[in-house]
Image (cartoon, rainbow, N blue to C red; front, side, top):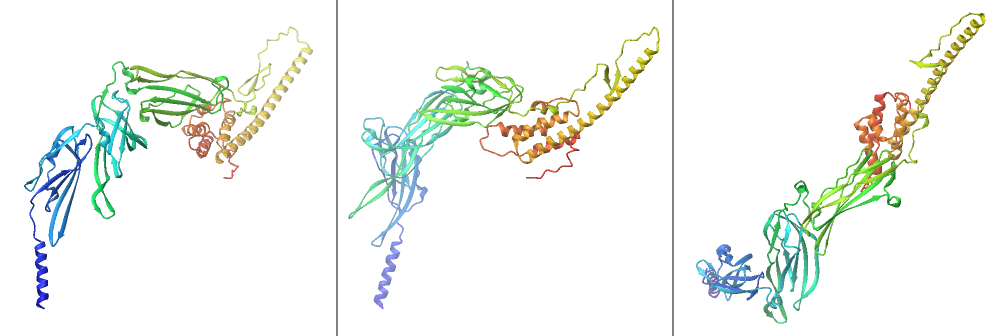
Length: 581
């Protein structure tokens, strides 16, 4: 029992002794590599032989000659032969600000100081310097002297010559500029000064918004690489990771303002480019290269704007004006860009659907886009000359029926029709010098004949009026019902072809005005709902739709019904009912 108590007491004494707090006695520092290359990082390790707070180390003195990329802090407690030891470790990644002999200054932790370390930084361009680098970044600008809003490209290549566990690349930065990555990263293998590297290439488009002298901060690589551990155990070799930060070279850039020789009225469309062109295509393609088409035929004019050294967002709007009698339906523009030999080529492609309402010659105004040639330093204009297109009548389109043309009443030479009555023409007076009975007989016969003729004319006119009214009502009903059926069946082409026959039937009851074009129909009806409905039909039939969509005739149906109701033309058609599909 006594022996057992002594053992327990001994263990308690040893445990109590292990809990004794040892005060900090020294601070040591070391670096992983010396000398180093410019823009290459080194790892500074600071060890305190006790457990201290993470913020006990002030890294401010390091900022004079180095960039502090990142700091990692860890603590460790170990017990050997019942002896406890504690350490606090800082791993600080440093990037030198300049070349030459630099000094890592004395660092202080709780009153204890480390020793200073001399670091030699060698220029990367020195002989065989790249052979000593496991990772390095190369950069290249397409130009370093440009105009404001002129696009340039920055090509960044990350060379990796060791096993990489993880890594990331920051974005470049430039004051008052727009920076966008072009495309995806390109990976390849290459040999530099006899050493094989894995190369990751990334390209950026930079557009400065202000003039002046600037410095581009190139991307910085941050990652961990695999290194061989100094610890060996039997046949096993342990691998460790090492933090690495690599900074690319800074690049200087001169940005010029808009030249004074550039026209003041064109500054709103300031386009600095190496090359800017306009190109057009027509569909359908006319024979012998002539722009000749038919009425109602869908015409598509495609205009392509191509610019070198401009981003897609910088390309101006393409506007096309139309003369009277020609309607234009522009599609949404298509934008493309492609990097060719470190030069960004951007394109804007836009289709315009043209619909002619009647035959004739149409002149499309010229299209002009002002730009500045950055190679010749001169103001230029890209011009599409004025275009003349000829539209011929189309025999395939439905023509107004002969029955729709009002008949011209026959007027006898002896009579004049005034206010629906027959008035005898004034004849020269007859002078009778001697009134014989034969003259009275002939006069009576003439009067009887004239009276019979008047009665006959009135009878024919009344009969013709009734027949014409019946025919017109029948025609109106037929065209109206067919038009309503086309709208209910959502048949855009048939509905559009029935507009003019339907409207001409209505006009024969009023002022006998013949309407031969849709433009005249829109002006005659003068109704916003009807105009919008007709435009929707034409856009569906003749517009170059990127996505196929069905036409719904509900709006046109309502507009026609409303017009007929207002003009009192639906009385005869109310007795008929259309079955919905």
